[in-house]
Length: 175
Image 1 (cartoon, rainbow, N blue to C red):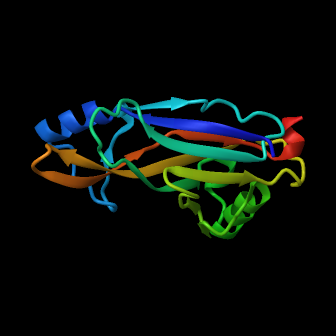
Image 2: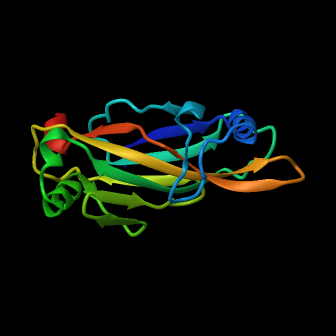
């Protein structure tokens, strides 16, 4: 199987330091703290031809202290201009044309939710047998993760999010 890995590296030390000295938000699952400034994304470019699976890997950039970094889920939302005005049923069909929805994922209207396949790793399967498409499809994906914040005496688990954009097309358009 041809796969592409997107590595999400979190600067856990700096994120911990900032969270201890600034009010950035609630840090709950419903209101996670935006962590885009503390994340380095590797290989988030055009999805290569014949890619059948995208593997998302969450890892610390520097792990001097265990911060218990843990991937909660990845939420995908179709943000393609031509699709934004379409109804939820049409958006679901676009997801199903481009991706194979497996057991650790759920599709509801405009959102596709991926759960980790194993610790800090999630897989998105691309439907390479879909009909050719001339369109690029753009997906905003929110990666939600938790991390322990604090000192060795007092820790609090907070929820964080990052929000990059991913481009994917059906097999025919990638030729």
